[in-house]
Length: 467
Figure: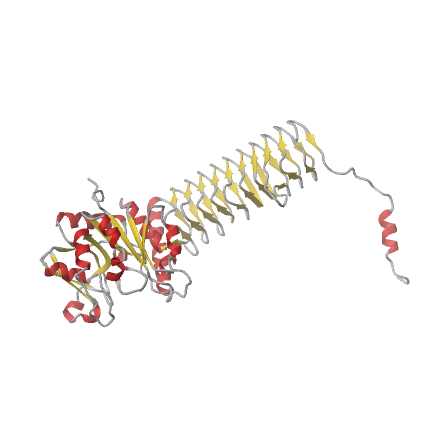
């Protein structure tokens, strides 16, 4: 049985912090680790663990966070910050709706929790019939963290560093800030905790005292992933998270058989999937849910975002966004695929080619200095230098349709909407405004006229007296 299946199972994500120490106008949890907001890491770990019922507690300034979650996600708003216990209290309606089950409470700025830890902690929580199960880790330097004090199998207390004596400070098992609760217990315990402390705040960790005072079981699951305790309160901390995440991704890629020539300036999204024998040069940036096939070569200066590349693709110092590229295609240098571009197998894009919202058929060659926008292009076509699809008339975009085996001469303008039939040719320098039948040659330029001696007379008329 999947441990993350059951009635009332849910996750509560605490995301009401601001970005003050980050010096950011957006909520702290939207600061990015490898181009991915920290809270999106949390969202995805919960989903991968099978916890689809999620509630996010935000501040009044955190409305932007809603856009990072699917429709149907629950939200609660914390009007004033009065501690983690108070944050959880704001989601009381969500807790009551999931009574009878178990709920995972997570901090939205600790992105390195993982699905395996979530599942294993829940398994222990249920096997031990615990009221609370704390997710913990053993670290080399526990300074600043709450220590886990155990009494045999039970956890007797979480002692903050400032309150710990020497013996407790020697403990290396620390609180990660993630908890599994029996939901009914949490609802009841929140009503029992107070704010009688120097900060006047309600602490979620006080629920452990409630549980032990009632003789309830409190367990701790110590994760093998020490990074689960890491969060970021400022830009230095955020940089550290990025560096750790980069190394973790590199380790995964190398284990899988991806060839990394040098990691200087190389950044790869944790959500990217790269197949064996692909080669990434230094200075490459892979963003989002990108898929890169076996044997691809991505050279320095390239950016690939939310795109799919087939096998054996070469991307040379070029940028690709939300597009697909077929097997064996060659792109660049200095080409740009804008969103919704689709290259079939064997397509060649040369220097300074831009493709936007277009499909290009197999083995078509677009050599250099060309713009293909809002067009459907067939197979085995040849675009000469300087070809432009004129797709915008100032009011609306229109599409061009280009058949198979079409030859488009240098500096041709295709004024949309026009259709070029299979095997059609256009003469260099033509501006095509009408359809071209298959196998026809279209010439759309003024006839050349030579005027003998004109340039000599022109130069003479410009000479000044005495020259």
